[in-house]
Amino acid sequence: MKQDILDLSPQELDTLLLDWGEPRYRSRQVVQWVYSRLSTQCSQMTNLPAALRERLSGEFEICRPKVVETLKSKTDGASKHLVQLHDGNLVESVLIPTEKRLTLCVSTQVGCKFGCKFCASGGGGFTRDLSAGEMLAQVLLAQRTVPQSRITHVVLMGMGEPADNLDNTLKAIKAMNNAAVFNIGWRRITLSTVGLPDTIGKILEQVPQVGLAFSLHAPDDDLRDKLVPANRTFPVASIVEAAKAYFEATGRLPTFEYILFDGINSEPGHARSLASLLKAVRCKVNLIPFNRTPLSKFAAPTAHEVELFLRTLEKAGVNATIRHSRGSDIAAACGQLARRKAEG
Image (cartoon, rainbow, N blue to C red; front, top):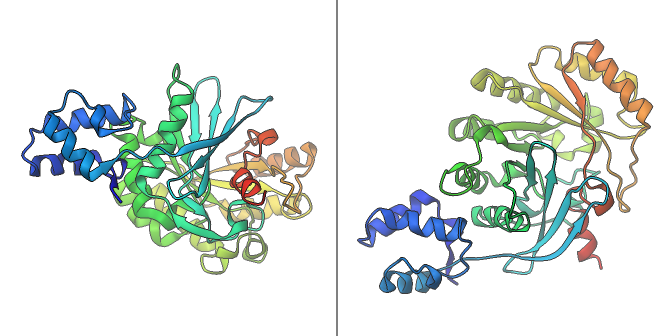
């Protein structure tokens, strides 16, 4: 099987073509064909010598995953794309427009190993990691659906755990930031993790200005064990320490994602415990009322309960906001559409 040219970083492509005896500007031409002109075949790169086009065509292909289903929200304009990869596996990306930004939520794995009890992505188990090129292809596919606009922000919080596929994720992030690829600023890219503290050092070393969001969802180990099984290996205290290390290294506030579930983690007592946990951490908290799925036993608390939880945090001095889920009418939560498709 030929190699996907999207899996080569601009720097790797530059090195390859220099080794082939080509002038340095050839790699810039190839990158422009792939990411700006949206070429699907190396033979289309007409400003390259015929011999180079032939050699590239013999060794590389430009993989373009297929969008097999698109759903668009009638309430907030979000759109979800169900993407079929070259081997038939399915992943999802979600395009979220707001007044000042256009955000794409990107998947990093087919399925997930971590089995969070409320998440549809891990319900079908783990299949494989995505390559960096397969992550970039999601951006290309989404950008083609909005040719008059530009994707301004990317969040790696779709299907899968980005930190569990870290090398490919970091490679994709660097390409997204590259001026010749998507030119998305470091601070406009966010990596969301269930909390794998051992990966923080590598993230800080390679992409220190990228936003970091921790999926917390509980103020203590007993409760988080029930919601996030990975907590048994990476407990709450280790997540808090990783967040502190991120702030100390970058000066940027880490985010704690806290999905609110009715009758489970949304009582005022939970809010007080969360405030106590985070009192020594420079951070922000996103409160997210649960986006219910047909496959889930969980439900969201009432709007009044959500507001009370927020006020309790604010009274304790915690920087918190309510982030309402987008695309709730189109199965936009992680893995919902892919799992529904797989189960017929």
